Length: 248
Image (cartoon, rainbow, N blue to C red; front, side):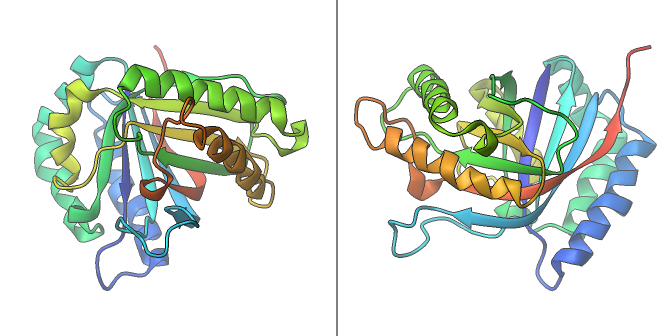
């Protein structure tokens, strides 16, 4: 399995409500009309967010994200087939200009790695997506291994009631970075990882701040540091499934 994640913001002159209605009811339908080789399509509709670190006096990166899209395929070949298909190139792709500030879109191709949580559950109503920019000088394998360790420390430190119900690390696959121009944002930074954390409700998701505090404490030690908080961000969102192809 392979996936693409794209964090987008609405085009100028469009409200957040208008943007959400468009991507779900208009753009989403373009995909469901002809999903080509797509396995799963999820829209995460953002309702709150935070960018950078409270230690910074000003933002060092573009802010405002209205949605995070997740597109999943069974294989890299299926992904390439979708993006090279005439329908996608002439209908789905060009529709982006109708709702998104495409130069500000950031995306990554990743693999999913699910890690244990203390109290797993399904049917969650809120999701946190945490984009973590690797610290300078950290190679990918060190970044991934330290990220896992930081998660384990956070889960073991927090009360079960404060932890997420599910946790997935989306790990960047650099070999596919050249195709990211599909969503625009050619000059945007590429993130090495994005965590997805599910919570029972929007109110319960506020406990992510406690989880983040542990990550930042681990990250403050040079021996275990792995990401740059000033260039990282997270969004609170509601997960909206748009399409899923079930095995025959």
